[in-house]
Image 1: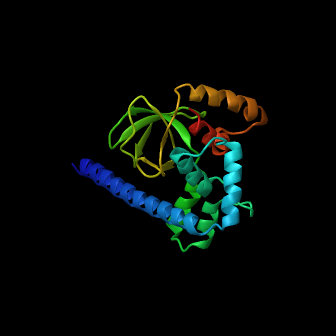
Image 2: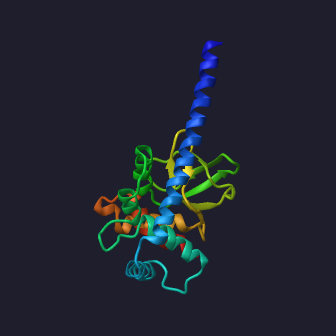
Image 3: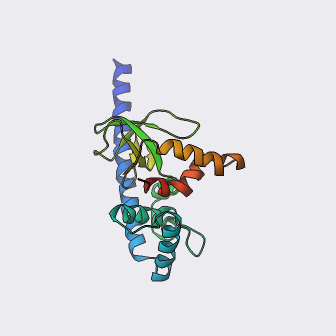
Length: 209
């Protein structure tokens, strides 16, 4: 009985830690988004728009493009200073040590394509790229549908991974094969990692019909 109670206590403890980590993740993300709305000057925004349009969205902008740009601007765009806005947020804002550690993880996350195998509050998905593929349990988005492919940023927490920001459904089931071919052409021969490839190239595939 003592062992069983100890196991139950550990499960409850991990659940509480997961809930705390999720709240911290939400808080850091929302604060960073607010920072991104007010901190960059007009020159920086114009520069970012020009780079984004040239690389990823040469056609007329729509709501999807604006959503992707907003997230890319925060996490992936390199400013005139050579850093991301999210990095500037971590360096200049008053954050707790645990929030800074969490932010350091968030800063490195690319959009990854995943296939949803089970939809609920406890979504089961399989990453579709990379050398170490295993099932992930996701929380933070209740709109994922079974047997569909989505691009997500996943924050590893305690018991589950947390979906950071919006998710974007793949426009075609063939998109993963296209990504693998592109990776082989541009990155693999130079020793580049999947995460580096996704960090640089994912917006193009998200915006592909």
